[in-house]
Image (cartoon, rainbow, N blue to C red; front, side, top):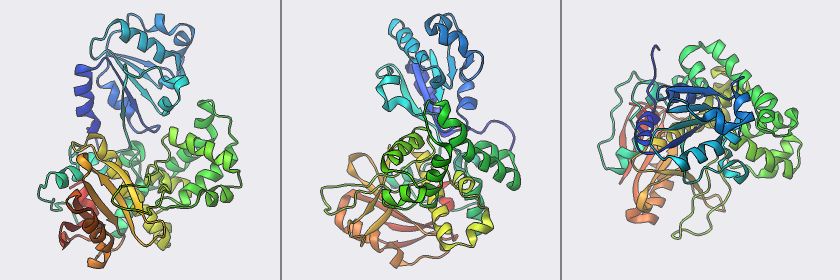
Length: 409
């Protein structure tokens, strides 16, 4: 596919730079941050190259006099540059002065984050299928929230194998857009290796690469599940303390993206365990070293890949969503009621989502959504049962069966 692929973040970047002095775009490595940000910059400084030396010596002096907007790529390689941006913004708050990009979510740590009130954070994720199909503005949850008609699939019919091919390819731009299946698989496997062998140490984390790889593999094997934490760190042969540190590191590198447990005062005895995910289904394939045929041979992997793939689309679409929805999951503490995904809209309204790998679904597949609808009343905006077939049809009041491709068609 030739030419620049417009991202859902582009419209936001344009708006933000028209009014804000500094913008930080954060996302996993190789998700397209620099390519996108570079389209808005007049000066580009790559802080993972020799250009970093001047900024390590004196960030304020090195930043002064650059043609704006200035793009500071991989800012976390020289954390002092953020202090220089803060001081420059305090002196002159003209909009559109600085764009920072980074593949490490360090804003949760005060030691590295003097940007509050000066730098607005925008997250970027791997490419969605809507972006790949040149429909970056398509956000399914927004249509549901607004009560708009549901989309009709105008793409060629996709079956389970087709969806798994998309899932295994993932959304990182190089394997998704430029590489064939065999080379793309090698790229993703190499990417997953580098997380433990290179990325963790670059960001100052003293980790045992072998143990971190084992823990990442344990997380991948449980993607789209709610395993006990002990299950994961026992599988990796590490302590709970080490596992907690690795959880923070993988989240900061935006390798994992867990869904928190949803809570509401209308329901009691809800589980509190997060639903664990790798951020990208292609990365999941890379960590597990599997292709489409391997996934098809395992009923467990089919469900995990389809679920991880759908949640990746929903998560990335949320960035530019008008309804500003947040994702979580619901599970009773006794496990009797589960809803795969809750998209919480403004005003406390929700969209409940079930994800099925089957090509046909029935009303029985919506039973937990019906329970949620009856419990939440008017707060229940809509329910969706995603499936790998081609038909859209009503399952129950406010609950619709949709092909997964509705996320991009």
